[in-house]
Length: 316
Image 1 (tube, helix red, strand yellow):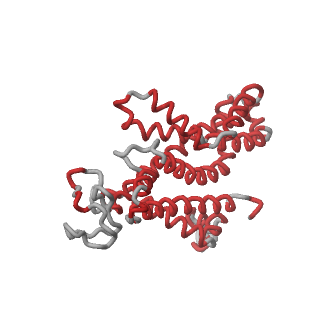
Image 2 (cartoon, one colour; image 1 turned 135 degrees about the vertical axis):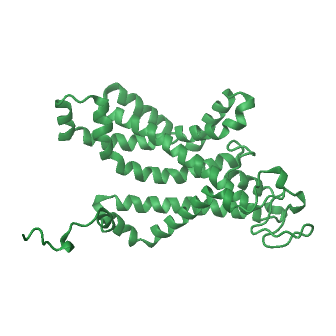
Image 3 (cartoon, helix red, strand yellow; image 1 turned 45 degrees about the vertical axis):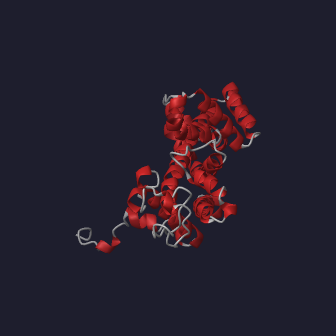
């Protein structure tokens, strides 16, 4: 009878309440820097996703452009058309605010896709190196060591140049974004492979792996169903920091003219365009895309630093 009349207040907490009271959420709620960084990233991400709805103009539709609006200063009516633009216009009369929103889409798409591809490659090779060992591990890790001797941006430029060279000329602009993603990913997989290998070597000798072998589990199920979930924490931290580096790498390549094509400009392309007009007085063409890139990369880096501390058991 006492079980039937149990006080409802003694019910176990819901999953949402348990998550809210967890150490992870508590750490986030007590970190103003992490909350501000997440807010900035969320605003920029939503702005990029809904760019066609937010942007007052389509900056890459030639039918909507008016060259008479070129070099209009922010918030100042144009002398010829009397139109006013929040962040001004560039040399072709494109609204800088709209170009930033569309450029954000390209930068975030390239950065996220490159990190996902690098993570897949690095995690797979790291697990294989740790579990198989022998010559397989030696070859994978020596290739990683050799690649680490070169700056990542040079490796990305080399891969981008080779891939673009073997792409038919008529498809180069269409494939440029995908080639850029592959180039950045192949220059960034080493960090994932080294960290996953180190964590997997520890997990390889634990009892649950030995038990899985005894019951006849194959190497692939053991690596990806048993070991992988236990090495994901450092991978999550690295992927967050690598996202900021991938976005900067894309901007650097585009700034150097070997990244996103002019028909699909990213923030790096917009910065390259604005740099040409900096000393002629049209400072806004360079300033606002640069501030956007800085805010995005810095916020993601700050989130990565907080995530590293929050997932570190020694700091709990």
